[in-house]
Amino acid sequence: MPFNRRNFLQKAGMASASALVSSIFQPSWSRNLEKAMREAEALSPDELASDEDFWYYIQQSFTVSPSILNFNNGGVSPAPKTVQDAMKRFYDYSNEAPSYYMWRILDQGRETLRTNLAKLAGCSTEEIAVNRNASEGLETVIFGLPLKAGDEVVAAKQDYPNVVNAWKQREQRDGIKIVWVNLELPSEDEDYLVSQYVKAFSSRTKAVNITHIINWNGQVLPVRKIADEAHRRGIDVLVDGAHSFAHLEFKIPDLGADYFATSLHKWLYAPIGSGLLFVKREKIKNIYPLFASDVPLKEDIRKFEHLGTRPFFIEQAIGKAIEFHQMIGSERKQKRLHYLKNYWMEKVKDLPGVKLHTPLHPRWSGAIGLVSVEGKKPSELDSYLFANHRIHTTSIVWENISGVRITPNVYTTTSQLDELVRGITNFAKI
Image (cartoon, rainbow, N blue to C red):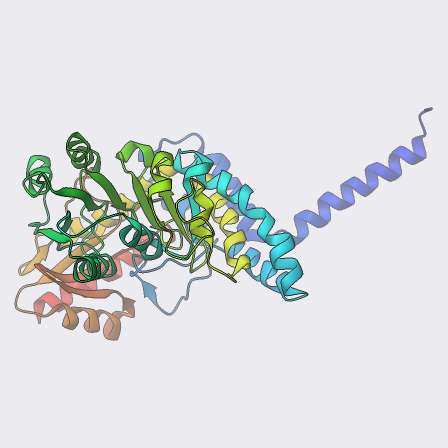
């Protein structure tokens, strides 16, 4: 085809105009973030952890309220703008003709989502089920395990309430026995933590429940060491990864778990009401699904997804959360989260009357920290911080753990943590 200068210039002009329009309409926060990501390539994760300029641009990806300092991201995290926009777009799309667009269009995207989650988790696509939260995944396994009267299960009193209550219900209904471990935390003593579980094992133990990160105080447990000891005795391992997935840098197979569940609306920043269940492939056939399937003991991981009508617009937006997580990078994210927790803890640890209940070492902790003030109730500190500094936290009183849980996130700045330090300092003087 002969060269046509006019044609070429018209096309070139259209391309230039398109690029210009794209540049004009791309939000400034997004352009700045792209620039920050390019510049960050020259820095190591350790160096980047304290680079406030870089994390400022990450902060601009969120729509958090400027009137409240949210330090309760351990409950549920806000999603970045891209995830919010995707969910809203898929919701509007669904409502154009719900039964058609949800089941015939959006539902078809679950296999791609499953593939992307499996890559992130480091396992097979045939081991990942998409659900609504960690509790649903864990209770699927708890109520689906083929246990009978007299069988024993080891769990910790410091596990999550939904998990504790599920095991108690199984005990009451089926006559199994729960052997409770009572952990003294915080601890950086691996031998102590592992031995508490091993001492509870017996010839009747069929399963052990291990919480990867204790939600109350952020303690990381040596899951792999406990799992190895369990497997030597033929014991199944169920891991509660509600707070560890996309928070700590690991792959699910690294833990030696037979079953693993997490909430994606915590540290992956997916829409609220999204979760993941991992079941080791050879174990799938043994677990009854929580919601009935046509063949309950089949080997297909999809049997755990029979939820009936579900919010496909939430599910499909998980893909954008994966992209956002990968953009930051797992190691960078973990380093920053741990840096933020230690930033405020280091500043208050020597204050009179202030006591920390979370390890400082990165092997044993991430973003979550627990603090208390001698002679004061956790609820009093929680209320004081909000009333006087507009800081939102949560008070914890569970078994032998008591304090105020502080959970910053990637959008948190050190200047905001300085306000937290001022609040704790002032309260400790009262």
